[in-house]
Length: 274
Image 1 (tube, helix red, strand yellow):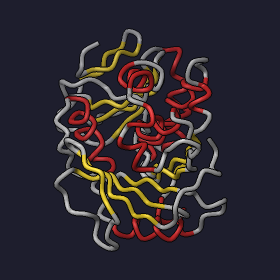
Image 2: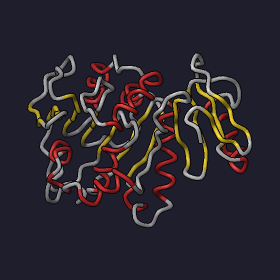
Image 3: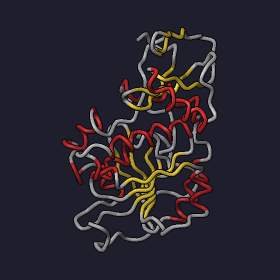
Image 4: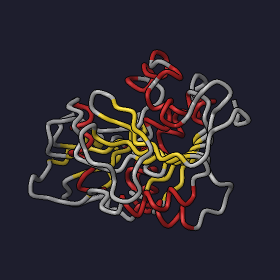
């Protein structure tokens, strides 16, 4: 399949470099009905020129820039880099685990209020944490929903995926009117100009920034998180970036390209789910 066309049986749609917007494509005739359901749900067209496409095929949903040389992005918790990290990522010794308070006998309940493609949430679920994920961009949420569905169908990762519940909506509004038991930890990873130079991150940022933009409401997001979290709020930032405006973090954990700013409220004790 050409990067600048979508294979729909015998039909090839050439890309238009001047086009904008998103359409839904089926990668084979047998996926047309599913594509139509997604198009209706997301209120997207299934024909006409577009700069991007949400494509449905045998591998599930994927999102692609039609005239770019880079391939599509999809959520895959079963194979690839996420699976490798699940098996060989360092367990509770990982910096993200320390940041959210994972320790012997403590597996906090976590609200990931900026879920994105769900990689960090999946790492934490792998460690035994129960998570609620919020994603406000409908197309990104669709990719994540599809990835979770496929993970639930895989015997090796279904138990991990079952620890993750996805909600679509504005995290600030949802947190301000939270109807359930308050999460012990709230995790935030606002959209920012990543300093991670990996090809994967650069491709995803190129694709998703036109959809999601920058999180200019990050201070309000932090404020809502601090009001809701029981024990702590954790914010992932580029290593040299300033903290989010507002309350100051109590301390930080710093890695090679990123750091975690921790806003402690109450100690995490060993009565949490182990």
